[in-house]
Image (cartoon, rainbow, N blue to C red; front, side):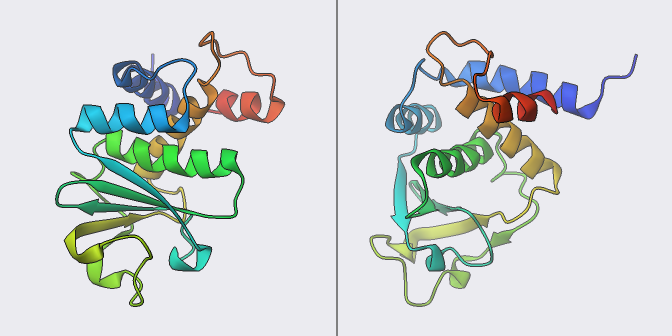
Length: 171
């Protein structure tokens, strides 16, 4: 019997999610603190002007020598901002910084005028994504969606939001 890529990925991602030990229900701060603790590196969230996230990206992950920074656009809904943050966290949990493919930039490609509140001197790599065509993007988006869907206090996967149920059913 052949197992399809989506089924195999979903099971693998569920194991990763279980290993993450995400509290139920969770807040954005609890999620970030939990992941930072597991990684042994602080994670800083910074809301920035959309124009500072160049190249059509929704969010950016700045890997610095001693910590990580996730940039996400200000002025978007809380749910959208949280999903962007979950997507970048998913890349971290999946180790995509170690086996990165796709849109990776050197720190020199950060905006020349700088990013308010971010010391870019220590940035080692910049990870930005603007599409979901690669396997890494597929995995990160699916894991982010599973994390977002798992915010229910009882941990069940019964979704009152029909769009979420349809989306999860397609994987």
